[in-house]
Amino acid sequence: MRRRGKFGSYLLGTLNGLWTVSLRLAGWVVCLAVVIFAAPAVSLGQGRVEGAVTNGTLGRPVAELAVRLLTPRGGMQQIASTWTDQNGHFVFSQGQIDPKALYLVSTEFQGVPYNQLAQFNDKGTASVDLTVYESTGSDSGLSISELRALVAAEGDKVHIQEQYAVDNVTNPPRSYFDPAATFRFHVPNEVTEPAVTVTGLMNMPLPQEAQAGRSPGEFSIRYPFKPGVTIVTVQYELGYTPGGLRFHEQASYPIVRAELFVYPPTLEVRSSVFKFEAVDSDRQVARFEAARVPRGAALNADLSGESGPPEESGNGQQSEEVKVLPNAMTRLSVPLLACFLILLFWALGVRITREWKRAKAGAPAGPQRQRFSARVESWLNSLADLDELFAAGKIAEGKYWKERLELKAKLVAILKKHPPAALESYAARHIPR
Image (cartoon, rainbow, N blue to C red):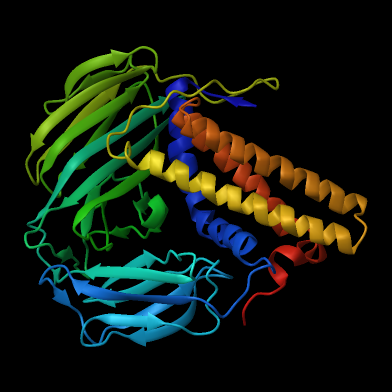
């Protein structure tokens, strides 16, 4: 097993690792959705999705707007489409709607997409109300309520993550959208491909394409910012020597509060903007803060000194328990996400258990299928136990995410690699055409 320092493990396990996993996350979600919602026990033709589209800027219905009904089976497929009437109302009542499946209601208004989950009641009806907003090309209503920068120097590498809480407080509310660029940021000149994600529906990280600007180190994305808070995360890696490096960022928008976390805490930090606050010896980080940073101001910090221990190979040792820095931007979303995950994996377990019984009743289980069954059941049970421990506050957030992602990766890998005959009961049967 590989071992790292506590904060280094946090960065690589939950920050850099999160980016790599997020590139595959869309595929995982599709695979899990197929497993859960494509079981043959579901009856079709009884579902109904209806709702209304309202203009949140003008406070009135939106007429003659195209609305689509999507499902994640086999990729984001369109099931049906319709138009809103004069009162902004729309209805999907096609026979192929399955009230036990997962659907998204989607529309686009003035260049900005809007999506909402359809949640069915016990009568097979889902009521979905979408709020859209007038678009504006002016970013005067945007600010960064919080910037959290994490810098970890390990061996000859330094890993950096910058997380922005972009707050759209336009009044009346409008969506900010500029086809050229909506969010600009800066990285050191030698960084050519920074990894960027935006937190989307159900707190899923959505990878974004970083567009290079005119100057070296200048990049931007074109994600529209709707009213409220949007989390943007930037990650990159640099070489490190004891001579140090300069952390540099230029505020594209006013920043209410900025925090800089440095590992190891023995590094010397010189900055006219960030002020030293404290050293957390338990997590092995030094914390610096800055407040009320105006638009266009530079956030610079020069770091120097010996880095933390590099990545090492252990002799089967388990990695150290990771203690996570509290994140004010996600503190409220974590319990909600945990509840969602518990329900998701509970439903997954129920579906697979029922299907397993049918498969065993129809044909004798060979050694290969038995090994397949045992592995999947074991990992599903581990996922359920892990979610329950996290919801009860008995496991640290960093360790929870790391172990959960590893288990999901194992589950998806075996589902993909197993012969198609063994997967027939999960994905190949009763998929609507």
